[in-house]
Length: 381
Image (cartoon, rainbow, N blue to C red):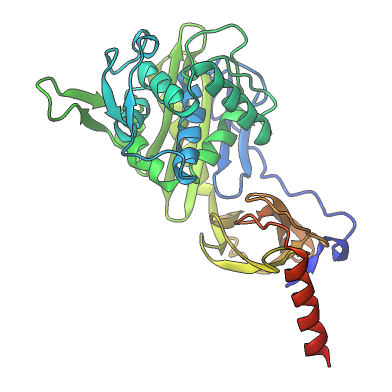
């Protein structure tokens, strides 16, 4: 069913929140969250909005901006990236780039995803934005767009810096956004690989996230550690049609960090399943654009839409409704919210998803509008 927002009920019931588990699944973490990646439903949280130093989990936003640039055609995996002296000077985790060394975007991204390369992060930032400072501005702007209200970035790699902070909740949000680019797990899900394969000194990469090897279904995303932040992890795992995101911050050591993320995953996979509504690429309706060069825009699912339910609940009585804004006038920009997809069980709202325009629509000229109006008059006779 397709309707306008003006035809929708005046207010919707608040989306139901899963009951928190009785036991604390991450007792040693300073903060934690467990989220269904498809719907964004929070299954478990603990101090999830407390701003804390995120260490190298920061690089999730760095990778997100790179993947978005590739998706938009502003960058290609095969593009060459030359390392500046500044990028090569980064300490901590690195892939030991030398000033002037050239690698492809793909290899640099691999160095960030597997080895948490601080040098590779800065090199990518400079390639995309011209300077790390400008890239950091882009990071903070994107954080605001995503509603990450607990976050302030001061660099692109998570090295200790005054005021550089995020929360488990915000990290889950940007992790969920990054996972919309399915190719990213090609890198984050690798356990090991090489850089400089054809050189005299090939560099062996081993993923800092050991869960990708030892937990069934795990394929990312990013570890972090500094003496201030302690041990942090944003992890994702998929089994069947359920993908989870678990974030823990401030863990005392890697063993405890991995064990508590494992407990989070085990709990959700045992208790929950996803009921699919649309798969990525499925047609979901048509948007009418007033005075646009295109009068109608086909809407397709830009990612999978599903609702999280307890296992044993077969999803009976689930229905959905596409509710479009009552008046969408050109110009329309790509990604502009034009309505919402509402999923119900009976009269209860289970989930609301924003629906965005898949393309830009410019305002039509007067001659196009005249011909369109004339055509309508002719057809009405």
